[in-house]
Structure formats: C-alpha cells, structure tokens
Image (cartoon, rainbow, N blue to C red):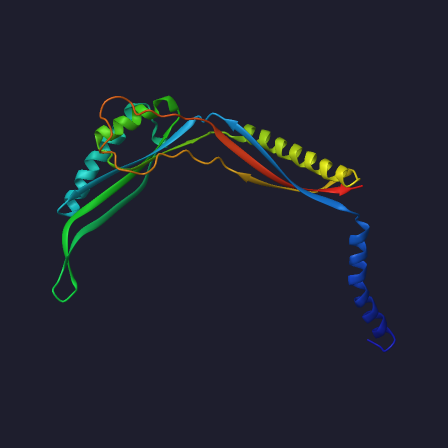
Amino acid sequence: MNGFLLPLALAAAMALPAIAQAADTKAGPRIFVTGEGEATVAPDIAILTLSVMREAKTARAALDANNDAMAAVITAMKAAGIEDRDLQTAGIQISPRYNYNNKPDGGQNAELVAYQVSNTLSVRIRDIDKTGELLDKAVTLGVNEGGGIVFTNADPAAIVTEARKKAVADAMTKARTLAEAAGASVGKVIEISEQSAPPQPIRLAAKSFDAMPQAGAAPVQAGENAYRVQVNVTFELK
C-alpha cells in the first residue's frame, strides 16, 4: 500500500466504532420487560416408578427372587390393560451388603452378609383413575422399595400456547404501565424471547412400602398441572 492510501485506511478503521455507536443511538429509546403466563390443566397420564428389592446369601439367589417378584408385577400390569410400550425397566442394581466390626487396633473387619438386587420399573398409566388400584396391586405382588408418582400430560401443546399468550399480554401491560408513568408510549416490538417451565411433577416420596395396607386402592389425587411461560420483550419507546 502506497503512502497516500495508508492514512486513509487507518482513518476509516478508526471511524468504524464511531459509526456503530451512531447507529445504536439512531435506534432510539427502548424498554425491556419480562412477562409471565400460567395455564393449568388436569393431567391425563400417571407415571408410576415401582422398585422390587430382594436379598439373599448369593447374588444368584437374590437375582432369581427378584426376577420372580418383578415378573409377577409386570404380568399384573399387563392384565390390568397396560401396554408393552408403557412398561420400561428403569434400572437393575446388584450390590453386596456388609457388616462392619471394630477391631482392637481401631480398624474394621468387613463381613459379607448378603447380596441385594433392586429392579425398578416405570409404568405409564393412561387411565389415571386406575393409579391407586395399580399401586396397591404392585405392592401386594412384591414392590417394597422406592416408588414415585408423576402426573403429566400426553399433549400439552394447547395449554402451553395459552400460557404463551398470557405471558405476552402480561409483558405488553407492564410495558404500557411503565411507559405511561414515564410520559411516553410503547411502539413496535423489537425483540422477543421465551423461557418455558414444565410443570413441577407431583411425586410420591421414595420410601418403603412394607407398612402400606394390603386391602383397597391407595388414595391418589391427580390435581392440576401448571405450565408456565416467561417472555422477555423489547419494545420501541416513543
């Protein structure tokens, strides 16, 4: 580059930040607000998490006992109308159980006492009125550890759309209120983004089922699922 063009190039490079800053200034004043919307709907699916734990002197014996118990649970679920697609093994765990005895020197001796095998089954129940009945039946057949219930919806699209509309309406109301208080008015939408929050699951806390009554369906209330949407909206301020 010759000596005449070099100063021009340097001047142009130094002018670029100033031009960008001027463009931002020409964009005019803006207002940024966050809108929130919530819509509720009754759940139409219950997901049961059922665990069977068996213990024996050997891992083989513990696994065999667990297999028998879980097979009975699966058979009962199918007999109650649960389809294969709605039954899924969530995990199988085999672990030794030790007793620890203190030694005179302050150490410990580990004595292998037994092996424990746990098998967890996830059951999707599309007729949620059967949830209590199926939970009770599963406990009767051998479910004795863990456990949980989550109520959800097969197709939440419509209810999420309702929550979105409420969130945008809330953002617009907030923007107008703030603008009027400042002696201005709201113009067009410059930018909008969404953050959706799935409903918080209603869970049955993990526990042992040994103390549950063996007669009658367990009382279960499905309640409602709340779908929440948050939108961040930037408006032109006039």
